[in-house]
Length: 255
Image (cartoon, rainbow, N blue to C red; front, side):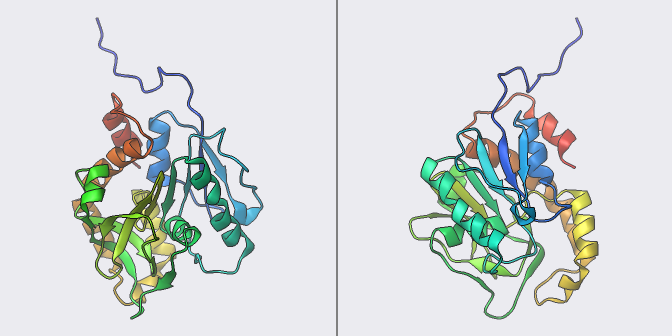
């Protein structure tokens, strides 16, 4: 008899994950690919362009706010709207994930400061990350380096757990109940890296930024481990046990 590979979708349909993006051409990248591989549909909203955010997450399994070139300190209405809206998953104790700008919005919702580096340094490229014991409790195997694209960082919100530390920006990841904030970008695919390093090449002049060729050379070294970490993190975040065949699906859907 011909062997059939394990199917990730022989389960009842899952509620969608709410995805908040900030540019017309933005995608949820590898995080979106991984969520779909786990059987979660994605519902994309762009408040910057007039999409409303739901008053409750009763119809959603989780929510993710992704990054963007704007600041969590900007005066734009959609920035304030998203920061205020994060109170919904916090109140309802629904899984929430903020990536880069989304993590900074979570920090601001929790009363913490978001600010540029005091010496004007940026992190554009791969930089070391140092998990704390709390971080290893969430995922035991962290990558040595993770991908960044930012020049602001956040203070650790009161009552939260620090999951990972960094160098120029000391707070890399934190947890507040079911809400997680990541300063780095596990969502970036190879195609996204090409776009970012082409369209955002002016950022390479910022102090601390890595030259463009380092991004791809470092990706060849660190990406496999970061991809495996993302797999374990998402399952932990969503409260899932190991899913048969997910490693295969992640490898196929990674880019």
